Amino acid sequence: MNARSRIARIELDERSVGRRGADVEHERAVAIVDLIESNSFAPVGDEGGPYNLRLGVEEGRLAFDISREDGAAVARVLLPLAAFRATIRDYFTICESYYDAIKHATPQRIETLDMGRRAVHDEGSTLLQERLAERVAIDHDTARRLFTLICVLHVRG
Image 1: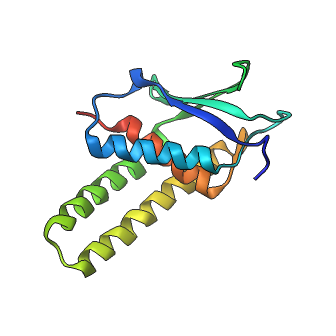
Image 2: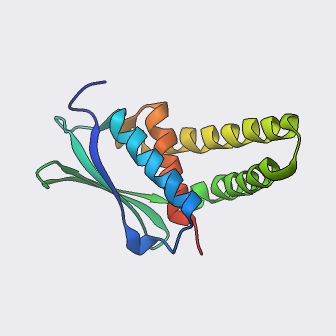
């Protein structure tokens, strides 16, 4: 990992989200810790970070506000949410089935659902990489963690 092509700090725009339960808060916290520990993030055409990233939702779009550690603005990337809605919906559906199965299903059923959950998560991560490709280069693991945070932004109630 290049020490300059990375996210040093990430923040979710709390105005974008509703109230979240303990499980969702845990997922958010783990994704942020893992992301800060290891990521590859390089805005195209910029000389290098490390970067601060503020992630939110505005007027039906994902907003990536990228700045340097000193707060100087680098870029603002807006992506239409419509491209992610089906994958996020599928991910929530399979996660709900997975967490329900943990309570009473067979280990084989749990494993099958977990594999499906990971596959949909990978699909969302790949989509995010593709949508950001012309503006920000990220690796697969960074895309996975960012997709988790995008899903957190969509949790309601």
